[in-house]
Image (tube, rainbow, N blue to C red):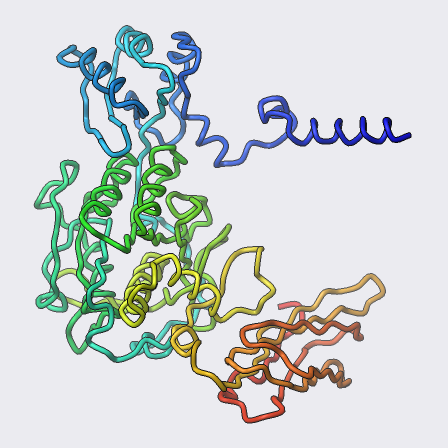
Length: 505
């Protein structure tokens, strides 16, 4: 009996840990899986295998442009010598820190030569087109509610001209042009081989103004921070994943602690992942917008990157469908620097990501020694959230005030944060109410839920700071549900004590 049980366990383990290739025909390959299959690790030096990979151009890849990642420096020197001066093979760029080079090879004969010359343990993958997610053509919902001009104060950003001082922020976007709101900002703009000096895009200027704006009409959230710009695309937002990875490394080398990467790619490349790791290992954090079109894009989808999704003033997300995000932030009706010295209102996750970047700079200024990643964790931990979405989509709405007051004892702030209703087969419904202690002191409370003319009461002897509790019950079908919480002590805020929802909406 024991031997039979042991054999069964071993069989289950073998099935679970069986190589992916063995089960590939039985599962749907995800977008990420398809993109990552563009990379081919050279193990057996099979020329035919490599040629087949080079001839098969994945969606979104640049034809005949290949990224070579060579782990050993001596192998890189040998390969560089082999292709140096050979007609038909052009070295378009290199990233010494990552052991990578970008080459263009057009003829099949030269691709065969390259396949022969590649050393063992090398990696070959395509270079992918990059784009600006904010420039994607999507339909913005009419029901979204814009933030007012004082959105920074509403989320708890202090009116402190020194907020962010001493923190280095790098923007990876289009080249930034002149604007009245940025006339007194300290900005260092780097050269880029892939972007001409006269190629100015409004998007880079707009994003930088959200952090560095310095006039009465447009005040950046961390205007005292040190700002640098690394152009990675032209005015239309087009670029490539190799240039993006190279700019990440360059920004980190230049001392950036926070990198707001506004340009993205569909290709899940090993090179971009290596660049993200390079930043993390040097205590730098990458903040990136998600796609409001609902697609998985990179670097936002890479572990270790703080991905940000735009939300309206009620916390509703922008766009059709967001797969996953780390944090919600203001991104509807946001005032930015526009062309010809004007101001404009924009919607999109790009502005949300830039605002979060500035907020993190401010938190680091207030708490010297706080790492960018630790500041990111604080924002996620203290975000305004129902608690229901944890582990499903992502974090809640940016709430800077709660983060800044986290060490002030004695704050009592009980809140109703979410109501869910689920219809049952017998015509009744299951009601679930989420309650959170947004304060810093353990607090007792009572909760009353009204549904279909009936009142349901619950109580707690003490909910710990920043913790959630959930109360569930079955009720007759109703059109609406209303919940009211009362703290058994003075409550700091009353605007979050009550919530009402229409069932089925």
